[in-house]
Length: 428
Image (cartoon, rainbow, N blue to C red):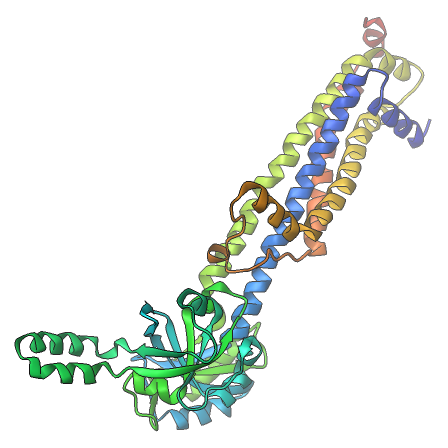
């Protein structure tokens, strides 16, 4: 008797005449299938989140941001030249960035203003591609607003918005107090506000809710005026595009060695470290938690095989009396666990891929049926559920599930192989 004998009996025992055991076997396969399906879907979605977040960050943010400890760069044109000529630097652009008050039709919000040099900025980031309405025009007194920010205030291309800078807030408060005592001082208070009347030339959509709802782009000179910076000498920082965005650390260190004392440089990974660490941690935690679904299914397999062992005690005794070896008996029951693992893997992978293919349609349908927003953009910062299937992850899930199913079959196989043929034949 060779290995096909064990496989033959394993298949026969998985579908006996007594339907109760067959139902348990089917439930075990469904348990493994659901565990693998959920694992593949969750891990793929988490991977998609990470990769999409990287794309959105790199599309809007520079690879490295150069500034100073006090937040203001003096003689920025000389520093821009130094940065641009550094090794592994493809492009560099100046910017001014800070919170402002944006007003339109009596509505007010406090987004971040980013003053940029359009020609240099589009060499560093892909901001031009993000402009969905209007044009990438920042000449004169103009502004480009995030689509979500524009939606909240009802802003359209061609509208005029008012931007106030909070840089002189303390002076304004003091001036208003003086104006209460002396009405002649009210004009001085108004002069301190220094609002900028800007025409909206475009609306951008970066694909990340956080950017689209909290950023307004203005020309560099407007940003300098709003923050009281010398247009020829001062700004907040320099955005840098490198040759290797996936490993900007060494390039940052090389830059710092060339820059004056007191300069700072931070990579895009460091700026968004909390996001990526949170995603990595959630991904690992979800993997181990969801793996318990397969462990629960494995207990179902063990229960099935123990039931089969009890039912087939007499048959096991006959096989051993006819000369079946211990390992042949072991492989009968171990084979059942492996077969359940194989079928569970195949069904789980197929169902997982199907769910991933129609994930957004299912999300929309579920939201319509429940009357709730299943995937709110405000929370997840994506309009659709991202997903990326990594073959390595699928392989790890399938192999882990197969090993768990096989290990679950070991205990019943061990007890079946240790049965004494004489006692087994006397079993009623």
